[in-house]
Length: 92
Image 1: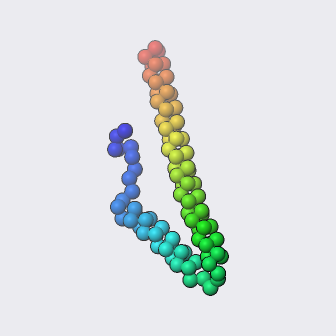
Image 2: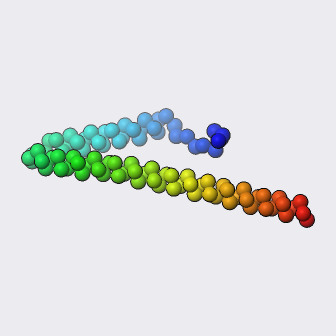
Image 3: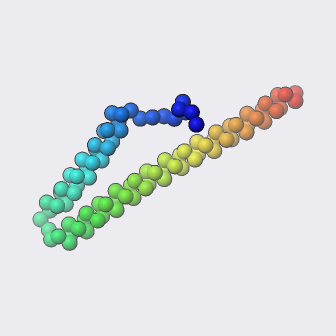
């Protein structure tokens, strides 16, 4: 695949996304750690946080993969339509 058809994010945007994620995760874990409750409540909340992060990443990947698959299907459909039109033009 050529590089022309691939949209790339800037280095600044990638840094921002990664830094925001790390900061949000660290502040949430710090907040859980500093809660004035017993350790098993903190553990339960941390486990919930980690499952939420994991499922969010999985959801984002699945949505992206579905979008990419639809783009590929549309490209194939367009290529078939163009081939049919070329065949029709040469016969006429």
